[in-house]
Image (tube, rainbow, N blue to C red; front, side):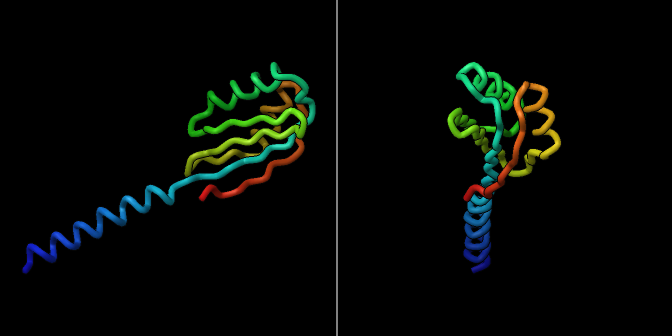
Length: 102
């Protein structure tokens, strides 16, 4: 009887721990930027984000002036850091919107 209860508890713990991993999704950042005019501009920004730990799914829409990136859980993009990153690259940072990834 004890063995059955222990096995059931262990099974439930394994299932719950796997569910926690699926909930640990992170955050999507949509960053508005002025001055993105060509694919070379987009490539330069993409390279900067690829160097950052925990950043993935980098998308750049030149027409809308929008840079969209995903950050894994525990990684946060600070507004002042983004202003510096874009301004030092020759672009004008406008705003940033965050959305939890489900």
